[in-house]
Length: 258
Image 1 (cartoon, rainbow, N blue to C red):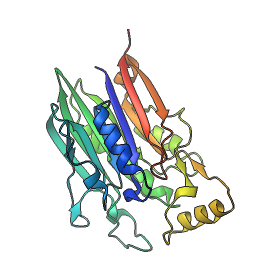
Image 2 (image 1 turned 180 degrees about the vertical axis):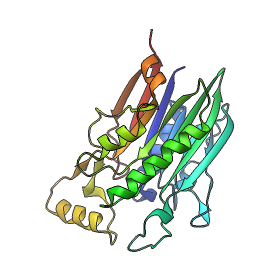
Image 3 (image 1 turned 180 degrees about the horizontal axis):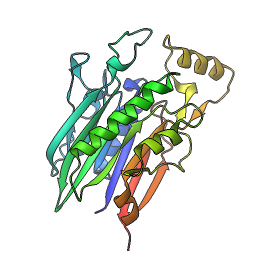
């Protein structure tokens, strides 16, 4: 089974050009799934009117609104099961308290022809607290395993906010042996010069460095696949050049080995 997936933190539509990028991307119908994070403010209106795709969001019970992690999928794919884990209450935000709606993990199981695939869009907490992200990775692994059935293909990921030394490697150890990082050789995906001017320490630091023209690249966006799919498929990953967010869009293609 061949799959094409795009992952993008939409930055709540903060950067100009996101609407045109999403229109172009959906209009091309090149992707089976789009894994989107920070899907808030004006961004939902950007994806309306594209009949080839359906939007999956679920209630975020921690904050009483719809999840800001979502999945766009081709209409012909049938959803067999779905699950959302909110992360808002796992760490107190210095500005939003425990009402930070952006963090969580959305997972769904689809049929594609005679195959089934589990697809997930996730957004881990930002900031310096690596321990909370480690706990969230453990929760995601349990979530994926609970939804996956024998023979399923699995692909999940998004904005993991892995910014501290060795953090992604530790996450890989937690997810192993069932799941493997498909984007481990990908270049940096976050440029702090485009961060919002909000009262959080990482954003303030990035803005100050950006004022002096100092680039702060981070390898924050990662995608994982199940070990059997990695063994049976060629996986191609690339960072797209479009600047429509502080994160770059990440493209993942899975093709069966010949």
